[in-house]
Length: 306
Length: 308
Picture (cartoon, each protein chain N blue to C red):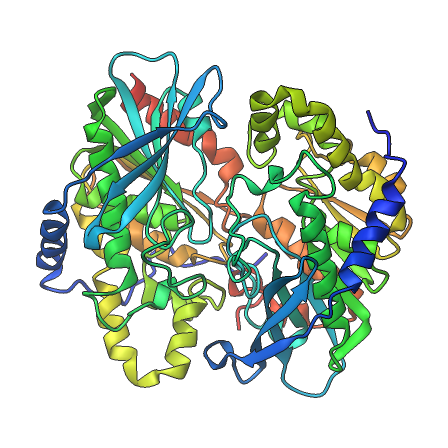
């Protein structure tokens, strides 16, 4: 069930080689509406594998760097956020933040506009043309762009996201910390049939409609299996597991923890976006040497309201 | 733990005297446009127990609105129905879960959302401040009507029992639940979670997180427009719809909500006119508003009011 394809390394090396054929050619545009006295926001356009032109939001803190950075890898939703909903805008005073829309997401939705649900199975019957091969390349391209910024302290570069965050850390050594919430590619073939919830329900829908494609779908998913990619990750990892008893709880994710080579912290969801969010903010701040985390928390999470 | 929030928070939001007339005008415009519903079976998403349809209907400004409609394969001739409303950044989900519980469920993608963005697409961020200084063209004028027309779609379906329609959603879906319950007397039960679009001018001072931060961004660049922004938002604020709600209503909030300040949740609840209403507060919870515990309460609430 968990056989790693023989061409696994070759698949990913070819993906990176193909990406390297395209210069990023960044265009950076000031966005005054979202700029403040503590941070300046830019819209960024980059070329990725395809070639495909991507869009992202780069926020640079005011003052002299170098600064730590949070790279928000492409999410599984159509909307591209500057910083995730509910994050204190003041986060942008302490970190460079860069949020990238992968191909198909708003901002990067021309010529390809992804559907949600739908993206998870787009091209899934062929590993070469599977949309997530391109999305993984997009995410790496965003990281490469961030690493070119002179304001960045490359010793403090945190990637945050779902599976793509971990995949990015696996494909590029520039990531120093990763915060990942597996949702799509952890033993998908086993986990999907146990749920009726999207996005994994997309896999169930697809295999119900095209049962004859099961073998090729499984083959494609094997290239993206997080356990197979984990040994390549050298970054310190915060693994956000589901609540105990859920399909992706800490116990279920144990093989992933074992496979990761860097230090790993597992946080089991407390079923509270406040508690889980606070834990994550504090972990990132500790990793980046930011002492005054209270200042950059949302007002309703602070011990003392400012 | 963070400091406790005030349960008797006094909102600065005031109701315009022509609030009702404003919305009657919008609704009259909408009523003149035929609904023209279209139901397209989605075989890929359907299963043995649930039929899934892509739905399209006409709304204000003749914007074509998309939605997902799910119905249990095994159902009574007339079944209860739910209108499910999406969060601000959420892609409207296929509501199979609600259909499995026995409800004919419509999940609407109001204008600007994925699948309803061909004619209107201010984007995210931006929707919240699109034409914010003119209530007649503000983004949410059409957006609200799109949602209310979802009730008309349900009423157009022969399998829907028109006396058993409920509405629910969280965050923006919670705010939309409030205004829908207020404007559509056909709604018999409403469950609003972590309601957004309520106490908006309060919220931008209580929190500095997106999406409300969009308004602060706008005002920072256009401080001279503050009075007009405040004037416009008053017509769209859930607090000003709340006194029209008469159906049984439940609201849940997280006391550490970093998106929709709990103070505004209290202010909203205090203004809801329904006699059968209940507020559930979840300490130690943020914008999830205790969803994991609360979902069973919502299930029970709708089962009591719609299934029985």
